Image: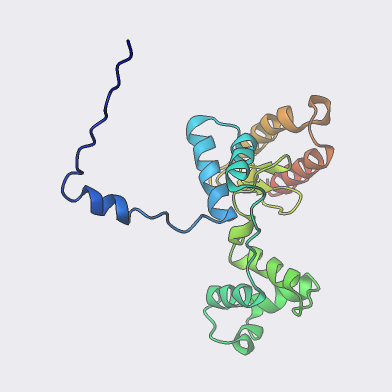
Length: 199
């Protein structure tokens, strides 16, 4: 004998219908926001960043679209860092002039402004929280030379021994003899040497 059950749905509680109707999905996060969240989750829960990123791309339906700053956004951020209201005022700044001359930069290109931005403002959002085989502590070591961040050390309190210890820990993972990337390992050695030069 078959028994047919009838499901009776209860009317929603007051306010619940409104809440359900108003809970529209928000704007989808961009690649920079996703990488930042992945780095946070990986740190808090010891997850593999690359696996989380691959999963995020799967959920996204493919690779995320890169979000790079425009040339004007880079210029505006640099001018703000120097507290200048115009490019003409910025060009008169001695530190700015010295860096541009020392680096032989032609300020007609976005790459030149990226270098200035990295030096005086910091990494643009698109370069923060990097994930991948050439990234350590959120920094793509082949793209950016940021030894303090890569070694996760405080520049004001770190000792020469701290630098050596941090390098040795990273070398265990990134040495070519341990299936590490040789370019990354060479970059780590340059970073270590640049920091130890001050001691």
